[in-house]
Length: 376
Ligand code: GLY
Image 1 (cartoon, protein in one colour):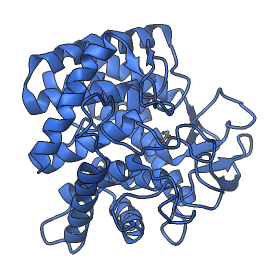
Image 2 (spheres, helix red, strand yellow; image 1 turned 180 degrees about the vertical axis):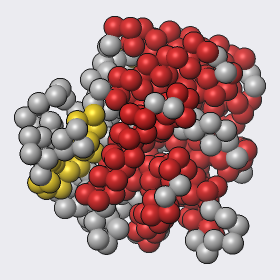
Image 3 (spheres, helix red, strand yellow; image 1 turned 180 degrees about the horizontal axis):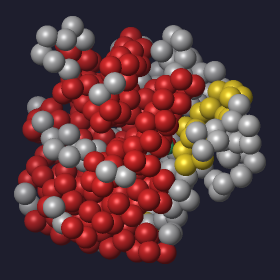
């Protein structure tokens, strides 16, 4: 069943190679299910390259490799001209593209480009309050002291850079950002804030909030999913038991609130009724994160079974009920992703990261291939 879903996905990706050429699909389609193409200056281009690498790993079809390689020049140029890199999502961009190339083929020029990307990410470190600033320039009045739960997925690039070079600054930033995220973004009931604000001058903690959730104190499902996966990856690199525990707790919160068909709505604190928009991408991210947890846990761990079962349940429903398998002209793999429902930005669309994590989860299930977050 997983193999069939992968074959269906690869057909779409193969068609997209012809459609996209040397450009990238934008972050999400905007209501019309057709990707506008960009030269590449946003936070999501790595997902298209990551999809191509996963497709190549599965099929060994050289078309996928050639297409992936074609995209890499753009990531290198962006480093040279610093195009669209003024945010923390450098980790998403470079882990799945350039670092993936190093992981798969040990290409030295990609290793050094990935280290350069890590250096640019590290420039976002602020000694006070002791955070990686997610968005905006230094001293930005709104974002100067703000962290975002999504950032946990950008930290593997820093951990990896530390492994490669032994330079302490990478490790310290990644570890402190993880600790601050655990302390301030995770609430007592194992739900999460999307973002948290600190005073950038004094470092004082101010308040939790949201950007894409329904309200400041709600639990945005994709944020919870980033947390599950991000703390699991942090544990893989740092081996601190409390990080494993946190990831499991966030996963339990998520699994306990799955709707009947296993694919979450966009926020856990909006009416959980059929009319509410879903976020298939949150489901895919959480499933792949749960499978990462399963890979980390010893055989006898009591949580392994429900984690594996929840992940399988989610991915099976995505494949059966949300994938575009019966739609020959589809440009996306998953229907019903949402970017930002409250802000009315792609509330019910294809979102390129949803496609990436869906194929990544399928590859974990079918082949045990974990994506490109760490060395294999
Ligand atoms: N990392 C941005 C998002 O999840 O929308």
